[in-house]
Image 1 (cartoon, helix red, strand yellow):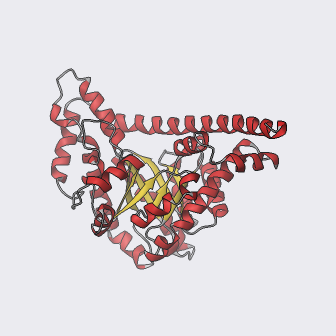
Image 2 (cartoon, rainbow, N blue to C red):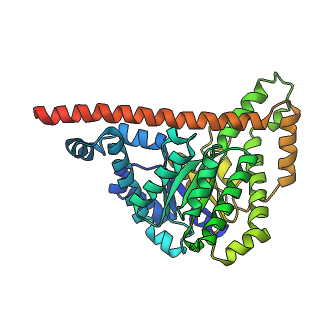
Image 3 (cartoon, rainbow, N blue to C red):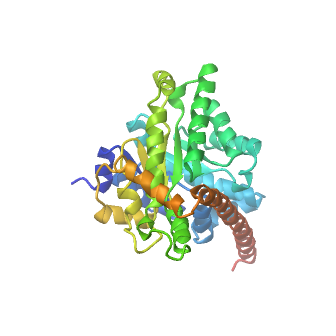
Length: 373
C-alpha cells in the first residue's frame, strides 16, 4: 500500500528530509527513508552543529584529520562534504530515475558570507567542484548580497538551493536571478538541462512572528488571523511561481532544456502545539513543489498526513488574510525582513558554536590518544 509520501508524489510534490547525521547514513536509516519515498536531503549549520557536536559519529575522522594537521574549518568541511557525498550517492537512483528532477543533497555556504557576494560565489563554486556530484545543491541565502550571487552561480551551471526566503518580494527577486542566470548560461552556449535549483520559502517562522505581533495587539487584532499568515504567504508565492514559470520568457528557456525552479517549503515543523503537526504539509500540497521535513514532522506525515491538492486552493482568501494582518497595523514586510536577519544570525551562531566544539573535541581526542586513556 502506498504511503503518504507516495501519495504526495502523485500530487506532484517531492518529500525531502531536513536532517543529516553520519550515524543515520551508516546504520541504513537514510536508505530506509529513501526506500519509503524520500527523494532529497537538506542540511544547514544548525543541523551539522547538532550532528557533529552531539554525537560520537565523527570522532575517528576528526582525530585522523587533526593528526594530519587540518585546521578547524578544514575539519568541518571534510566531515560535512563526506556526509553530503554519501547522501547524494544514496539519492543517485532518485536523481537518475526522475531525470534530474529529484535526488539532491544540499550543503550551505558559510553564513558569515551572507553579506559578501564575491565570497559566496567563490565558496559555492568551490563546494560544487569538490563535492563532485551532479545531484548536489549549494545553499545560498536570499540576502541582498546573495541575490546577485545566485544569478552568477546559475550562469556558471552551479546547482543552487536558495535558502531563507520569507517575503514575496524577495521570492520575486530570486526568480529573476534564476531566470537571468539561465539566460546568461544560454548566451554562453551552456547546457540548461544540467542546472537545478529550488527556492526555499520558510513557513512556520512567519506564523510564530505574526502570531506574536497579533497577540501584542491586546485584543485589537482579529484572532481568526492567528496561524494563517504563513500559509497565506506561501500560497501567494506559489501563484507567483505559476505566473513566472508559465511566462513566454521562461517558455523560451524551457525549450532549451531549462527546469523550473521549484518552490521548496522549508521550516515546516509546527512550532505552536495548538496547531496540527502537519499543518505546513497538508496545506501546501501541489505540483512542482518540495516539502523538506524534520524527522518529527516526517513521522507525523507518514502516520496521519492527509494528501490532496491544496496550494492552489483559497488564494483569494489568502489575500484577505494578509490584508487583515496589514489592517491590524502589522507590517509583514518588517516581520519578514527581521526573520531574514534573525535566520542569518542563527545560522552564524550555530556555525561558530560548531567551530568551537570541533576545536574542543579535537583537543580532547588528541589528548586522549596521546595519553592512551
